[in-house]
Length: 97
Image (tube, one colour):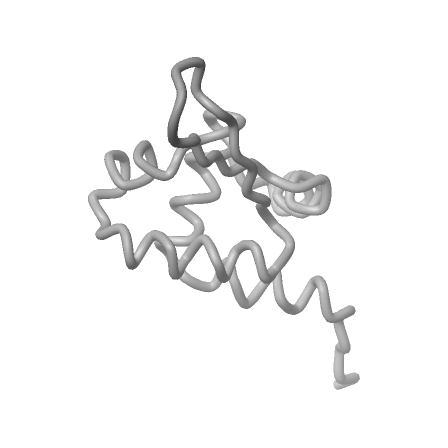
């Protein structure tokens, strides 16, 4: 049997999605289009440190990105996560919904 060598970005994405909680996070992002850190904690019931760890792994795999918005009132910022174009294509190819 021939050894299948995947491109590195595909291997990283497959490795990242090997964890059930990361797949759960990806599905939440797919369904909401964008999601805040606090919404992820609320929806997954995971600790903030656990969520942070999984988000970093998904970002390393180029499946999601993080961006910030400033609230209308002064002080602070809101952090949101969304799929990258690669993440959208990858999830579509695997029919992740």
